[in-house]
Length: 112
Length: 112
Image (tube, rainbow over all chains, first blue to last red):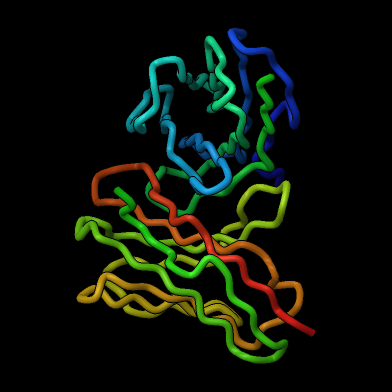
């Protein structure tokens, strides 16, 4: 059974640009969550989607947005990139969102 | 406001001995707790979970204990192996939500 797949693995962008990250969940999982990991801050929750609906949102500015498609694949978009957005972005999938979540390897975003 | 705290940033243990990783939380609405292990440049790997209706859950070398009155959980690894060296995160979910709040992690080093 394939795990959670995130693409791309690495990304370098310039301040002011926008970026889209992709996540394919484990087959059969309908919940997808996104987290940002920075040194010293641990994993910070961004948002969670289930059946194309956002059910929970973390404390991030509106520049961070996401969506989920009917096949449960999800994308995350960050507009007007800032240097502080440099981080490892992790996607996790679970069957319903109420059980254990399984993470992908992450996308390392560097903003220069 | 850090609702999930891992107060020990690092821990060193001899191979074969017990590793005990601790986690404290403040939100009494948390009802589901998980432990993850993370290697550098990889996503977190799910280890074990526990519901608030239990006080102990075992899976092989890993046991999680939950003390609801103290709002404290711990992960015991017995016996510890060099391959267990990683950063360990505890996470908690509040009733009725679909987001996990993570601690800042404890780096475990198992010495051969």
